[in-house]
Amino acid sequence: MDEPLFSPGRVEVAPGAVHVPGWLDLEEQRALVDLCREWMRGPGGMTRHRTRGGTMSVAMTSLGWYWRPYRYSATLPDGRPVPPLPPVLSTLALRGLAAAYGTVPAPAPAYDVALVNFYAATATMGMHRDTDERTDAPVVSVSLGDTCVFRFGNTATRTRPYTDVELRSGDLFVFGGPSRWAYHGVPRVFAGTANPALGLESGRINITVRASGLPPAERGPAGASSSEAV
Ligand SMILES: O=C(O)CCC(=O)C(=O)O
Ligand SMILES: [Fe+2]
Image (cartoon, rainbow, N blue to C red; front, side, top):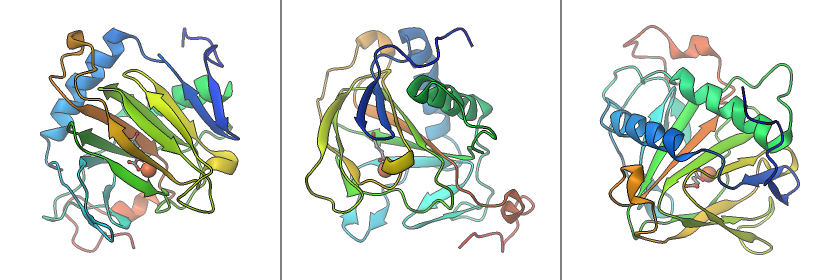
């Protein structure tokens, strides 16, 4: 790793919640955009899930485990196995911890799932908590494309107090420790703000890497029909 631990520009938004602006350079962002395109075209497809609040405006694909409200499973809805988490993403998550906190805990969290979220110009994500994981490993999130407002709140309510942070392409946001179960959301995307050199025509991509805490054995053999994790 040639990047410094503890990125100099880091901002602690709340205890354990760290924003690192400009974390990835343009070259690395472009490489990730290309990979996201492949993953989004992959067997997991792009889905706008139905939640208790209605159909999400964000379309997503999952890697490692398939997420749908409000659980993970080892198989896709059509019964095929979920594409594995690409090692580039588990590595990215550990690098993200180092940049945000200056250290990677030992043993390192077992990152095993990523959501790749696509926001068209008018897409938003309501205030929610990431609670389907069985570990408190920090969530590591990377933004690509259009700038957005990321609202980072508190663990008790989906309302104030919260902090609005502008996330730009290449930014890192990590939330763990006392902030791991905090409410957060994306109330706004600023269409057309991405650098054209990124190769993403429009919209915003967010990659969220998490440790599910689910035992690998529950994934079962490829194509197994009873491998769903409840
Ligand atoms: O798009 C983002 O920055 C946040 C995504 C998010 O909170 C999630 O996927 O659970
Ligand atoms: Fe989330």
